[in-house]
Image 1 (tube, rainbow over the protein chains, first blue to last red):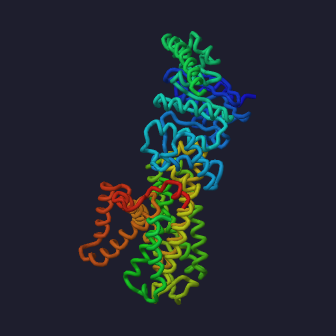
Image 2: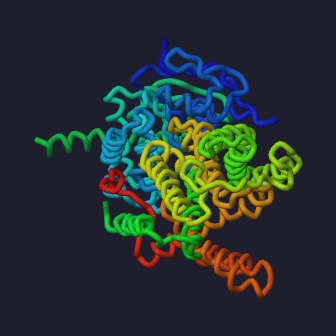
Image 3: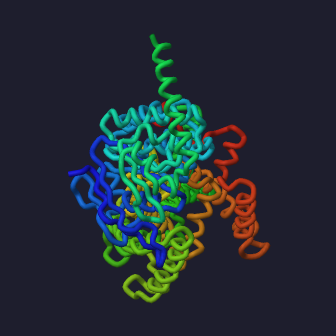
Length: 261
Length: 330
């Protein structure tokens, strides 16, 4: 049994079909990337999985339980939490307090919640900002806050909606390192991303949406060669660039290893 | 405890000391004003729990206040029973009624919730007017009784009322402080700042709002019971009115919504203003106090929407936002 199973999910808004019969599954401990052009229904699918929307038809199974149409807070309690693409800091509360709200999901004890919150802040490089009102932070820090906040809920499956987009290249590296670190700790991750350099190297599987329909699913190297995906989303130029970049990165990595020695 | 909190607690010690000095309150006018300041601070804090911390603006709190007031009066007048029992029954009833009313209303968001609460005051006001068992439009008048703690009635000196309101203050502000610093407090503010975000973090926002509503109504009703005891009577326009509902809201806005000391500050400014203008400027015509009231609120809204607490913060005197490891734990 897969950890998360999306079975034939369709989401309609009036006559608009945002997702049509989307099915895929995620195994425990995987990082799965969800990609596709703007308006292809990635965020809608996230909203269906996380309980913000009730899908018009289809089922979502998490850890063997049908969670279709359950309210978001119940799904979060089961260990499935998400970040928002358009960041939603609890503005008037401090950064620490934002994360405390997440941490209180698993404990009502203040000292323990505080400990969890501080650990998550450190993990997301937010330690020095903890007293700042969340609304006054830079976009990069707000993105990190989104992640820190859901980590505090001690999730089993994270849905990251463009957690990397809008960050500087160093910040992207940190975030990618953080995400792979979480996977190594045993968390399962489903992420929407437009930055292929960030998502391709770390994903075990890529699911591609276009116009609300799943057009491809497979491991990253197959996806980058898939004709339909290239036509719909990646583009010829990108595919070439990615190949070049990969060889360059491989060289760099060797170089880094030499430095370490 | 930091410097700021010390100042506040110091002030409370001074207020408590008044109760210990014999004759300090007596039957004086400032004694009367002090009692009202503390009572309205309690009422506003009750409102603040729901409106300030949780962001659900209610104009219906005079209904809960009224239920508490009638609870104590019905016990005293209709049954000759203890007003404490009446206050307890009234407060529990208010909490239950508030949950029943707000269950459907919480489906409405923002302004729509506020508008719905307006209607509830009107409905309940009419209902109380025509309900003979509770005295209809005439209300209930207390019989003449001897002063005692047993029936919470004093006519010789206001000292007993002063001690009573101090206890009420300690209860309501104490509970609010406790809620503020613990899980429910974080959840209340999270729901105010973003309901969907809070839900995505596992917060059952409906339950959080209903808990805040129930606690808020319970405390408002306790204040109402005190008010009836203090006036020896109750009638519908005196307690269930939009006028009174607005006071819960305005005092909190003036002091600073969602801040712990805001309600006390707001009451400390507005109530003396109301009582002194009513007494000394009444010759200018009725409603002078209301006009000054209105001007003050308009000024506040334009200049500093965070109220007096916001001003104090602006001048660097106090911090309204609490954060940091030390503070969270205190």
